[in-house]
Image 1 (tube, rainbow, N blue to C red):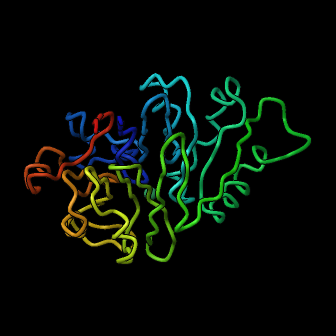
Image 2: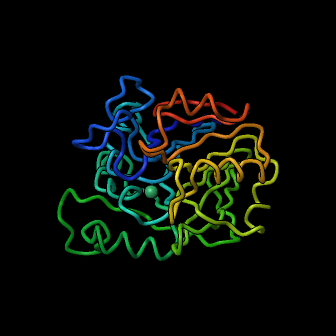
Length: 254
Ligand SMILES: [Zn+2]
């Protein structure tokens, strides 16, 4: 299985437009972060988790020719705003499968009504094939069983996904013990770590480290990072041995 971090930034990305914050001005390419997304590939399968405003650029810079589907964690704009840019895939492949909580599918339908129309569609508008993700129901993607992991983003439900020995969770602030149990035995865990200070809807660095210790993966990578976490190089040096900051275009194999 190959994982590509397409984006590792929080909602505004790094640099933030117009910001003079030292991290936003950093020359280190690892301090440039597009909105969060990850690509999961195995055999000839290719799935993307979330489809934020940087989706087009992420597909171009990774020369992605075909996708089997998009899994959504939740409906916030930094995870969904790029949906119109599935058009090139739609033109070549037909309806693009999307997987999300029923609530998230409804939110997508409100925002991208022209994509979801069943008649009178504007020529050139893309179409999707909707799949409802339910908690405690395994998804069958290709030859793999993918397990949704239920978590909370303050008061909003979000899904993480476990693909075999790889698990990806973002925008988590709290998670029930039963859901943590679903992560037992993962080799690679990805989870959000927003910044140093506490936040109402995201793990901060300390909470993310505590969560990694609770799950006990072989390796962990942090994502959904804001400029307020600090410089990549400095923060990574402070982390436990098997914990890393992800950065855009990082690829890992497992
Ligand atoms: Zn987010």
